[in-house]
Length: 353
Length: 260
Ligand SMILES: Nc1ncnc2c1ncn2[C@@H]1O[C@H](COP(=O)(O)OP(=O)(O)OP(=O)(O)O)[C@@H](O)[C@H]1O
Ligand SMILES: [Mg+2]
Image 1 (tube, rainbow over the protein chains, first blue to last red):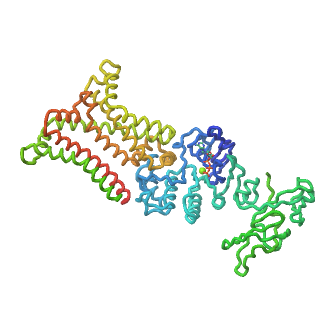
Image 2 (image 1 turned 30 degrees about the horizontal axis):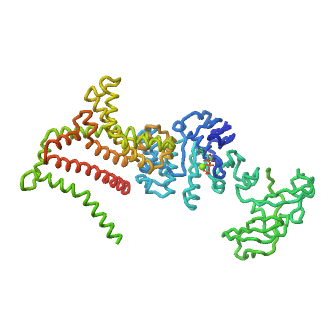
């Protein structure tokens, strides 16, 4: 049995089914992200785990104990909010100490723990300050220390980084992950930023319309998306319409070039149009070794992003985006010029619709 | 031109409010023929009834404030947290005391709690004091509720509550350690307004026949020439001191936050 077990969770607000049959098992010490577009029910799932919402049906167990009916203040769950939510009337140290005071931890022990927590987040000197005297990043770190101080069983983070600016966001997410590893605390992290989710999670659950579409390691989610939604939501995806030529052999044609996909027989019939999906990094500009499919293309757009150049090229009836690395000796291709793109048939992703 | 008009309006306004006060103050100083003196004030301060009624009203004001805080803070908090759709209704209810005259309320009290009723509060002095405190709390309700509600608006009540809950806090801890300290300035300004109301209140205290400051002022006014204006000036000074304290507390707390 998993450490944190969500079984068939359902939540309806009036006639609105917000979370539908949501199940998830999380191992002890695991860092799981809930990823999905706005309104897909991520926060609602998190709030049910925290005890702020009661599931319409389903069960939540932590460490074998059913907590579904327990109140929020009995669950020993740490939570970090998007809006910092530090107590404005208390100093940083008092904020961190709050959970310990409520628990009835004696003063010397409490002070030691607060010092330890402030060290952990690297804000030892700021204990006497008030929240309004801290930057957003510092406030959020204090919120993390406050949530962790009473040694909760589970840590929940609801988009804790989205109010911060880009640089702080990246450094703080790494810090959160480091601290999480160090303490080995089971964590659910909610975000709608796929890069954020992929960079720090052990496992990602992609949600859509209250349903868990796919759960898996970032590598798996990105490279083997099971549905079109997951493929589109996580990373950029190129789709190319192809005509089936020989379904038994897996042979298709794009823009007059035919090639074999090497996946065995296709379920489609000869003459049908199927959709091929490719990640931008799977496509090369020009010919390359090991990329046996070569298609003629016209350069549509060129975006110079620094180390990477993103090119959009017209191929047959579709437009594909592809990434090439910047090379100082090779300027990007001019817009409107003719070019060739190449990819390996084994990199093509098939999606269930 | 518009500037000139604005200044003119301002000066007219000031004169309109200040002249009667100046006249009254001037008159209160004329008890001794031919010279200005504080004789009227000395008379007032030497009157033991002044001190008795004043301290009685002060005590009742304190009781009213305590009762009001315990009634209003949890209510306003709960409404903001759980019943936001009920806010207009609650606001309307808290405004009723401004519409219903105190005399109506007090006659209602006398009818409901007279000596032959199921709860004969008017039968004893302490019972009547309790009744009077409730009446004062009702009169102060519009001010107290508004002050506290405005204070609550400055903090994110829902998120702070959830943060505290996730740290294991129950309702009492949340109210006492997080909500109340954060609306303290608002509560204090509500408290000073309550004090000003209670000190000057006449109708309820007179009809319930309690020895409060308001009826004392009225009694003095009916029987003496120079002391009533002196008393009025004193009453004004008390009210203004309350207003000044509100300012001071607000200023001080900002200062406190900024310097800490
Ligand atoms: N208390 C509530 N009452 C009614 N509807 C609600 C309530 N809370 C959430 N909802 C609805 O449930 C749906 C999911 O909300 P939720 O906050 O879980 O989304 P989310 O995935 O966290 O979105 P976001 O990324 O914008 O935070 C939304 O359509 C929202 O309107
Ligand atoms: Mg959300």
